[in-house]
Length: 52
Image (cartoon, rainbow, N blue to C red; front, side, top):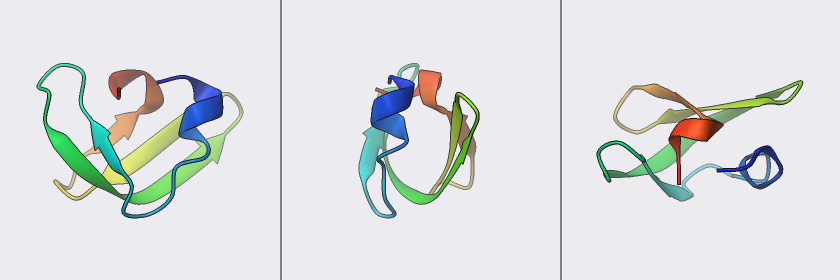
């Protein structure tokens, strides 16, 4: 996912992990300079490049 799209994510938005294809809900989004990390309902934190 591109940075500009990832920074618009909100809680409970659904995202898909590129490697596994698993659909997850976003719990929390953290935006820093050119990086977005998302804490998802599976308890893992993902970088915006790992998400579709």
